[in-house]
Amino acid sequence: MYAVTAASFLGYTGFTLVMPFLPLFIGQLGVTDVGRIAMWTGLSLGVTPGLTALLAPAWGRLGDRYGRKIMVERSMISFVVLMAAMAFVTRAWHVLALRAVQGLFAGYGSLSVAMAAESAPRDRMPSAIGAVQTAQRIGPAVGPLIGGVLAGLAGLRRAFVATAMFYAAGLVLVHLMYDERATHAQPADAPETGRVGLRNVLAFQNFILMLGVIFGLQFVDRSFGPVLPLYVEQVGVTHARVPLVSGALFSIMALTGALGHHFCGKLLKRCSSRIVISGGAALAAAGSGLLGLSGHFWIMGAAAVLLGIGIGAAMTASFSAAGSVIPPAAHGAGFGVLTSASLVGMASSPFVAGCLGGTSIRIVFAVDIAMMALLAAVVYRTMTETVPGP
Image (cartoon, rainbow, N blue to C red; front, side, top):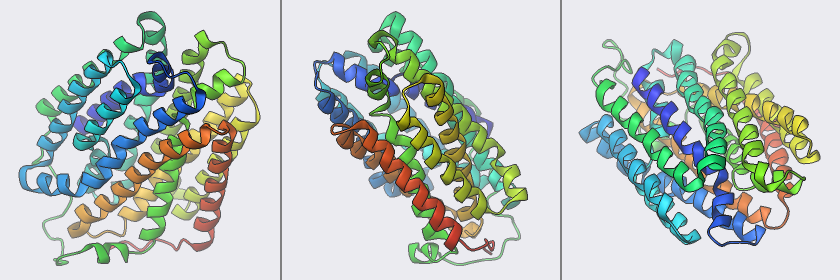
């Protein structure tokens, strides 16, 4: 558990050293039109999780056959090589091509959440999911700040090399510390539930609703990557300070998201999953609206706080609610489907945001408001109290 959590922290920190500033890097590669920058950024950010979602079942079967540890190591090795290669690109399509190749080998981040949920006793599942998701949020909380300073001092190209080094450190941690024999997914006296297929998984209580919620939360969370640096410059921040200001906003959102993940387990002891998820989505809707209404840094910072806490708490509560109805024999299938919903949201959001940002960046915020408000209303009205699976 410690190995997976630490590797997630290092990987997500390294990733956010550079990816929040991808619009600026695309501009350095000769693309000058704001709409085209947003488009290339959206495509580059979206292609990796899109391909990962398509290939996740195949990698999952290989993991069942050869072990998850080697699958995580395979993924992190590819990120070391490909992130270092991005330091030498000269065209925007080179970035897109390398991100596509990453999609063929990625998947360690989402796998770590499923491993945490699968390994924990069922009464501690929210805490286990929250721990790994907290690490995945704390990394992006410090990554953009480090990346913003590094970009200003050494340039964005050298920041890609630093990212490769973070992934290398995570790879060493997993290789030395992770013991895949230590699992507590299924107690020795657990009843035999037989083979559980995809149709059975989808029939679990609230499961399809949670798929939609997880997709929506990831969609909104990833919608800011292609447009926030452009929006920061658009509202009057000088070009030289854009990396620092946008990096600070990304970090605030990530850090408060980590708080949402961390405290979700305690919230779920006092409130139902329905209240936590709908309340978190409502907070995210308010944050999206506040972000699009003002260009003042402190107001944008307050909006980032609402977005981070709301999405963080709602995401952990959604995984926990879905996981609580999945029997041990169906953990692989169930969490595989949840991961696919998350990856589809991660893949489609940057593409949609990039295309919308070419017309008006504030349209992206309007779409986020509508999606979060709809999710809050639907969950509050339709979600039933969770009954754990056998």
